[in-house]
Length: 102
Image (cartoon, rainbow, N blue to C red; front, side):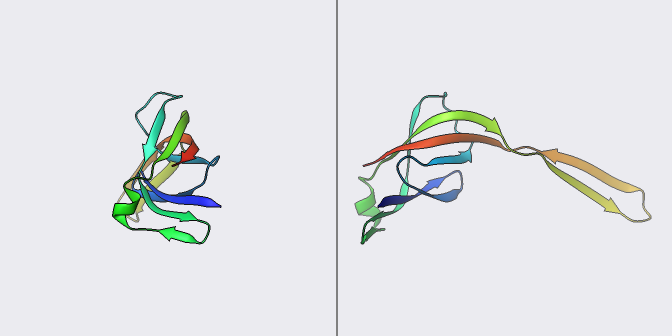
């Protein structure tokens, strides 16, 4: 089985052809194709992690949809001072499907 470790949005993801992965927001239109940089490539028993050998490796992905993550509620409170603060956060995400590893 061929799979690759790719760098995407400050993290690394293990991907194979046909996988659907959620990444940090990619500023491309839905249906567009993007290339993800490979960090490691595993092809059966052969493992490639050399930067020069990986320069020719392309991991192509197709953008399926842009979405937002689950809401995270951040609350801060200090006793006896009257200090309380509430803040929310929703991450901007992109769902992609891995189409090929060349």
